[in-house]
Amino acid sequence: MAITDRPIIIVGCGPGSPEYLTDAARHAVEHAGLLIGADRLLDLFPDAKAERIAVGADISAVLHTMEIRLGKTPMVVLVTGDPGMHSLARPVLRHFGRALCRIIPGVSSVQAAFAAAGVDWMNARILSAHKTVPDIDPRELAPVDKIAVLAGSPAALRWIAELAERLAPRWIFVCEELTLPGETVTKVSAEMLARMEASPRTVVLLLRPGVWDV
Ligand SMILES: C[S@@+](CC[C@H](N)C(=O)[O-])C[C@H]1O[C@@H](n2cnc3c(N)ncnc32)[C@H](O)[C@@H]1O
Image 1 (cartoon, rainbow, N blue to C red):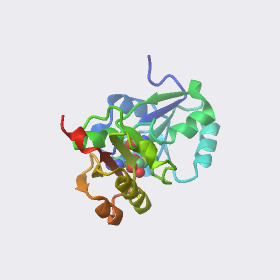
Image 2 (image 1 turned 180 degrees about the vertical axis):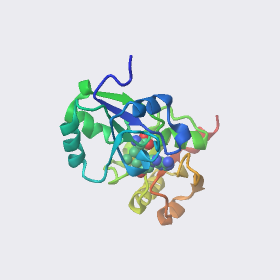
Image 3 (image 1 turned 90 degrees about the horizontal axis):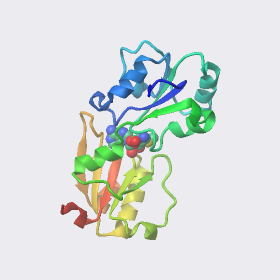
Image 4 (image 1 turned 120 degrees about the vertical axis):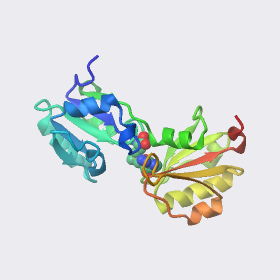
């Protein structure tokens, strides 16, 4: 199966370091006529010959530009981590349909966070507080041993701190700038988390203490 056989290829670029880009991602980008993505992702491919469109907050404008170019040039949409986790893949798939899109998976920041903590992510519950905090009843999370939250804003950290207090005892790992030169993984208390300033690229893990004992 050719990975560049559809007009739109959605490429997971991993958590940020070029070392975490797959060969499949690089291959797709080599064959692109148009590269679409955040500046930071476009910068991962300095040698790509393709035309570049930087994605900002206006997703409708991006979809409109893609519509005009559809079928005229191979398009590659770059997303952080894996396309299946809170990414531009969803609006692109919804707008153009699956038949026109191929998805190339990437290493998610959530996988990188569990790897950094040395804990497997079987049966983990993954939540996004990336833009807005989740509307979820903490009682639903009480039986879950491993929770990962896409965080990054002070509001997200405060929400996770409150959640951790409700679910106590939990070990809290703040995983910032994963795979990047500034990577840090810090074990904190809920009180510390509520007052913390973290990188916009942060995943917080809430782990029941027993899951550590493998
Ligand atoms: C729009 S979501 C994209 C998630 C992405 N699709 C994935 O699979 O990792 C952005 C969130 O991903 C997380 N993130 C992305 N890169 C990261 C990194 N290098 N270190 C820690 N968290 C990261 C942060 O929680 C950030 O708020």
